[in-house]
Image (cartoon, rainbow, N blue to C red; front, side, top):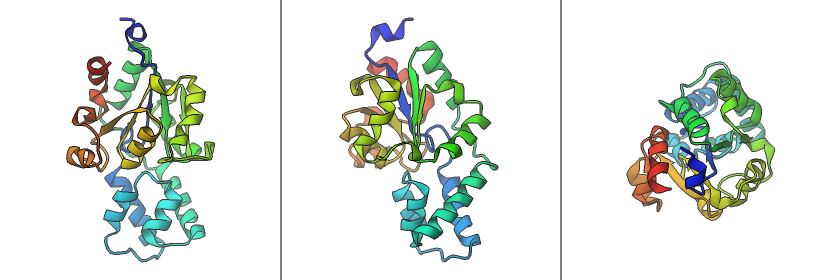
Length: 225
């Protein structure tokens, strides 16, 4: 089927953690352990704060959630990146298969817009043999604007050479939703991060745009486009 002939959808942009990489809860547990091992205090309720701030760049996440200064937070984030590049979290079930179907069978461009630093992301992407599936990748250190700022999409849309109304963004945090909504980009939320259906609905996302995981995305596209 010539999919592009039948729809104006040309590209799908994904967040990485909690969408493609199953790194939500284990990632939260990892950073708490890193901070603890470095001899710092673990604030009461830090898991709740981390869940709320998840999706923020790692240095800022540590600074806000653990009350540490920027220099210390940056060093701890470097340690987090080092461990992530040697102790890999699994991919979300069927993630690699789904990406291949979207790209090879549905003829869509595929991109990543993530808060990770580029080298850190590439370490994981290359480990799982995913790099060839992506037409464009935008990381925290590639562009001045980051999520939830809607301008964070400008760089990757230019790389993909598509207009906003020809793409879909798939994310797992409220910040992802806010960035896409502010940029007038259609959004789908998945439940493989910290947000479940009720959380998404409370954030204003329509039920029809909430998926259990990206394995359901192909069917969602065929239905809604």
